[in-house]
Image 1 (cartoon, rainbow, N blue to C red):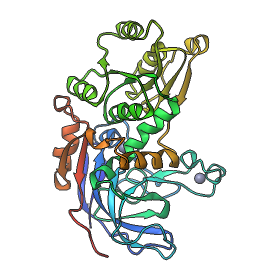
Image 2 (cartoon, rainbow, N blue to C red; image 1 turned 120 degrees about the vertical axis):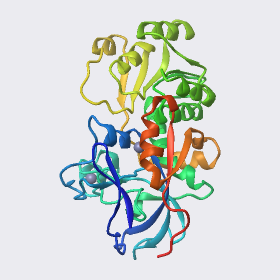
Image 3 (cartoon, protein in one colour; image 1 turned 90 degrees about the vertical axis):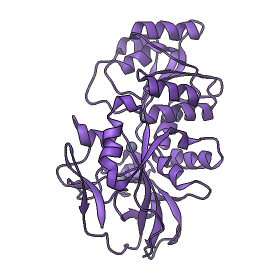
Image 4 (cartoon, rainbow, N blue to C red; image 1 turned 30 degrees about the vertical axis):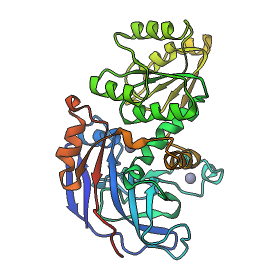
Length: 358
Ligand SMILES: [Zn+2]
Ligand SMILES: [Zn+2]
């Protein structure tokens, strides 16, 4: 079969690879339909550091060259003998988290905290940009009324909803979102779902900022950090916002969030910073501020995401800015995303055109 694999920096190829074979008792063979590209994929292409292991992953044994694609919808092709939740022909969204199921954290249900966890398309043997992928029984959710394209956006949408839930956004809150890439843009929509009254953003790219305003943000704060903080105070009766969400992961963005929240406010950090950074811990104590990390999503946040999309409350397809056939993934996907002039958010890659039979 054919699959998009990362071999190294600036080395993404469409390779001929062996098919996964028949599913084991609790496995499901799927044919990916649409897959999203995100910042994690772009880091594999341009660096400086990616997430795909060079050495075999302890849970999955996977390493480079590795099949990419961790945000995808698919058609079920074949199921193992113990599978009861889906049948061949079902359309599904795939939750890429692959956990051990046996450690104390997994046994508590905190799957995202599993120390052995792997991700399809990042540290597993299969990914969404292959003709076929083998997934675990718990990794599929039937799409029901969701479109295949919406199904491909469930994954980043769950990351954003999880960050909004970790921040505790409640009806009537004011929210600041720093960085309006896909996660920040989806966080605007997720904050609206949670009842935010006013959403402000910090996004230097004019095309992305324009989309943020279309999605429901009321103002983009410009200028240097001190000016942005002054504007936030002016807009919130001198108080600061209730919750700030750092979706940029750049030097200074967490401190901007700490300075922008009101006393007693919350800073939620779903972005993965490239390394350690200084934060204003004195303000964290004296204001005080709660700084919470938001890693991926819980199963609950995933299920809430699917339910909200189905209900028409979380229109995640609005962040899709272009589509490309898999054969053109480098030019139409990776190169498009690193061109700031294009202001792309989510590029969807079409992997298989139609249902594939076993
Ligand atoms: Zn992603
Ligand atoms: Zn575990």
